[in-house]
Image (cartoon, rainbow, N blue to C red):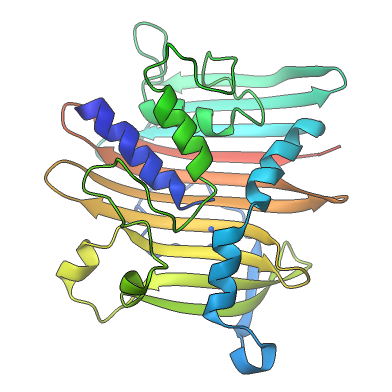
Length: 312
């Protein structure tokens, strides 16, 4: 029951991120310290001929994020992967650090730095956190991160987690879509339906991304004037998407989720950012932090910071 629920919750967590503001952040060390967007002012909707529907349609029909991760395979680059685990007092009790050079001609992966400290492994040599296993699977179709022993992109037929992993890999890039088969979550991820829109505010601002790219920042957030009971029932607290003004390409996504009931509770924030390298849009930063508490499973608390640079 515990592991099944944890698998389902991971699917719910990543289905909506596939979007930065940090309203509900967990009060502890946050590895994401890079400032990438400078906001200018609120956008005049009439003058710009934009509407909420314009942004929602762009979010729900976008396929460019998935394409960007697939394009990584065609490039050589340096990846720096940091994972931090925490105790119940939110003090760091484990660290994983990898600096890896990925080459395409020939295809190979070279460790430049490989460090593990603290409570990282189980007695059988596997990583302590199920979070790490699931996080690895999401991105291993782009490159092998070393957090999993699996060499295959698709789920192994003998792997009891394969169905969840494959669903997770597909749904991460579809924010606002329903997630079937997750107990007590149901349609809570469908924040763009007519029924759910009454609970959210929508606004967008003008800004500059990575010091030079003109962008719109579209933010969906829970309304302030709702009752506490209503707010507690809304799983997605905030969803932010960054659009390139020049072609409406999506350059960044951030999601903030928190939910609790008798069976589980979680508090998660995740951010994905892209950059231009020649003609390609490619991932440059992925950050995550979350707390998961599921019956019969040890509570998991972790943060990730993944940086990609020097694309060639």
